[in-house]
Length: 327
Image (tube, rainbow, N blue to C red; front, side, top):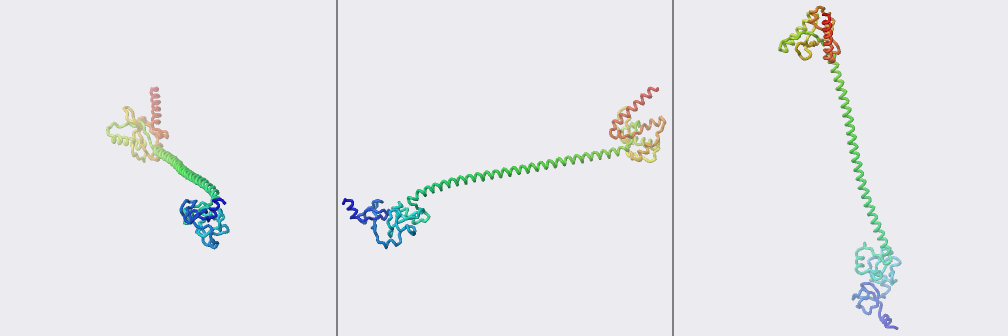
């Protein structure tokens, strides 16, 4: 028998109270080979009745696989620090599961901290990596959704601005059409008013009488000249033409006064007076003809007095030439 075998036979297998690892320790105060600390140790073999007592683990033991360590297959004893894997639900000694005392205390105090055995850590790490990937993808999706939401808001703003612009343009078009319609109506009304005024003026002028060759007064005062013209017209209508009823409101000389020329005289009259005057026979004597001149009433004269005067001037010129030829 070798020296090492004799040493193992003379010693009992002890478990470190700190790291929970089983080792060959000769005395109760010998340094633990695992944690290199001077810690108290206890016997590895205890009575079976102590197995049924409550162990100092952080979780309530239960199930068919929690009576022994899943790694070393040693039955748990009273006071063993054991921990349960949150993935496979198997129990391990803290030393077998590589769970330090500090971590064990944390797990015992905080129930929301998870612990996984060595076999489950790979799967958990893979799952964590997948979760991290999913989180990154979720983050990207959220960012894309945020960008889409911002784009939708920008698009909504653009649509809103286009609607406002369209409404403004539509309102401007309607207002412009209304303004053009109003202008056309105003133009039509103005044209109708002008035509009505012309018609009224034409009707009013139809009763006007123009006397030619009526001698003009040589007085300086305008009122005196007008009175003298009125008196001469009254003498013509009442004396020469023998018109019983007539009313001369005013007498107007047409055109500018010139030396050696006699301006025509305009006498406004009522319809009945005009007819009576025009129906009266003209005197045939030369003296009366020179005094009266010609009484004319023509629609053309109403439209353009200057044209009528020009025609009358040409007529007088023809008569003068005939008289000169006969003499």
